[in-house]
Amino acid sequence: MRDEKITGVFRRLVAAFVLLAVLLAVSGCGDDSSKPDVCGKRDDLQKAVDSLIQVNPVSDGTAEVRTRITAVQQATTDLASAAGDEFDPEITAFKESTAKVADDVKGLTGSDKAGAVTALATDVPAVRTSFDALMDAVGSKCD
Image (spheres, rainbow, N blue to C red):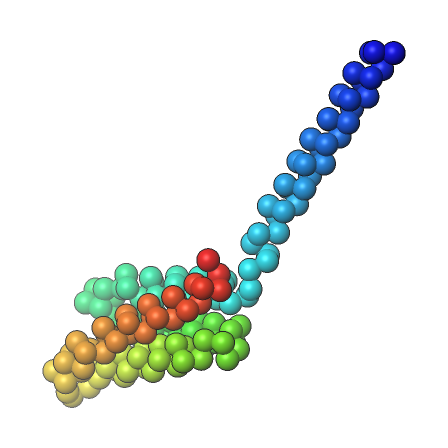
């Protein structure tokens, strides 16, 4: 009789551990999918910005800079679509600042190269400021 009690207790412990393991596995699987779509779009925007930062305008050329700025702008549009109106002020500020830099880069191939360089000196820091504000806002939803 005593062996039967020990066996019964052992079976219940094993069953409890199996149930616990299954619950932990299931809860671990849901972590990534439970985040809103905006989080993935935020990550895509971060990758596009990182790619833009890595471009070398001298060796890669202004066409490559424009291509990467366009990628940032598209990733921003995708983020805005996923976010709806939730981060509208931050997205708008970032879109406006990147549009200015895109115009400045176009100006580098025009007749007023010095003016474009001067504008870039002012507009690039504004992109950084608006990007940080956007990432902070979206991060509150994702992190």
